[in-house]
Image (tube, rainbow, N blue to C red; front, top):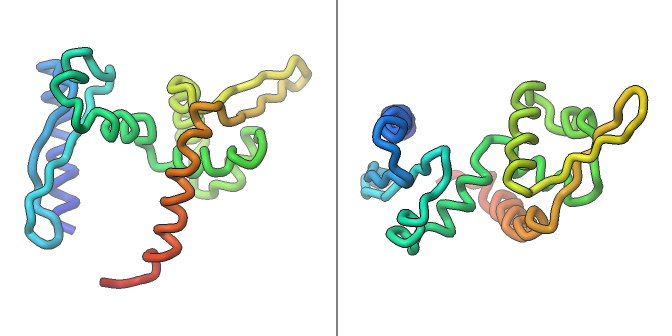
Length: 158
């Protein structure tokens, strides 16, 4: 638990530093549960500069994917939308424990990143449906692998 606490404090500190000095990716080492140092990367909320893409080509793909999927509920929203387009309340009902504000924020971010579409029907009251885009569908195999990993190792205690 102390590693998580340390990580959280470092992330908070790095958030302030990134805004002050406008850097794209911050690397730092933290001990994991086996006291090994691991490299953790954080991304500037403004995205990546071309210089950053060149300088950090070896981790850019992972960092980009992590950045667009960062958020507690994004994986589950995409997983739920892979079957059919859904209305806001369908998503909210399925993902219990998710506040209206959090769901709205996550949906807006997914839409801004081109992973989902938002279609507004000209009805009274207005009907809004969310569906996954082709770009979002590209992430489904990754999410399916996460599901399989969780099924395989989720109940096991090391």
